[in-house]
Image (cartoon, helix red, strand yellow):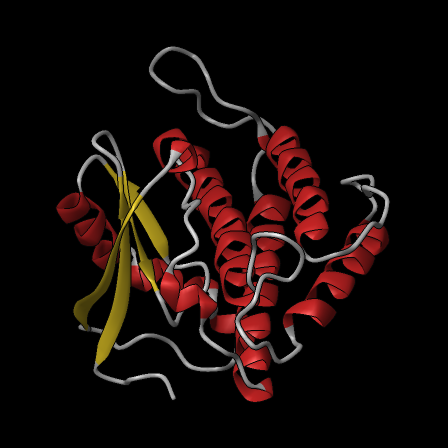
Length: 218
């Protein structure tokens, strides 16, 4: 049962970067230079996250949540690169069928939000201060290629779809969701990723790039 008043948070940190991840809300994870700044960023993104998962119809985090740090773990090279890359102890907890379905629905909502945002975005996005940054089509291709890579952590071996082929991308996502919906004893699906962590990582990646596109469309 998800607490309606508080949000449990896991912090992963290195000397250079940290991530704050909402334990019970796949995809809600923000990074910053310090744990405190990452926690502030997580809170600041509550409304964007709530809008991003709305298609799931499984509720949203409380509007003014109490953020409770339940775990602090050492980050790794992925953390420093800018990815929430550490499997927390909370990610190894067992998962019953009902909760697995809820989490899979949140991942599906993150994909739907990314597709909606990318589909309505301009072809060319505003560049960074040094002229860098991928345009929309390249971000879409990156997200699809990443999902094709993530599927291997779920024990799947489907061919990487053409990012412009909605049916093929949908088939990949359906296969991934079928794995995420399964109850779990908390052990890794293949070698490293547990079902809980997989939902976090996959949902975060799509929402993070959806928000990038939104921010660079203006």
